Image (cartoon, rainbow, N blue to C red; front, top):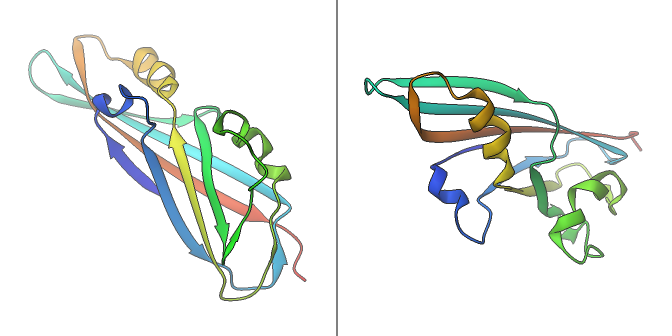
Length: 145
């Protein structure tokens, strides 16, 4: 799943979100979830050139799991707020998934991703961040039933 954002998307109270869907092809229960994050930041240089930097994000600490639905089952209805959602992703209640079941996941992107990627990777001579593209690959692992 991926989405592009302008820096202003991170200035309000609500986090920008990225959503994705996949289909389960074999009956299994999720036991482990691995998340890879790739961030591409595009800067405007003083000479009006666009300069892009692509960085593999070292962890998913700037993501908040907002929604996880398997079929018609909400997978983490016991979480009271989004602050601890991602920390409990491997402990949430994943149901046994039948073949053909759709899985929908939504992540919120915290503004701290700007500090992680934009500030540290800003090229010399670039003043303004033009866009931030976030790609998330999520892999669900578990025993086939």
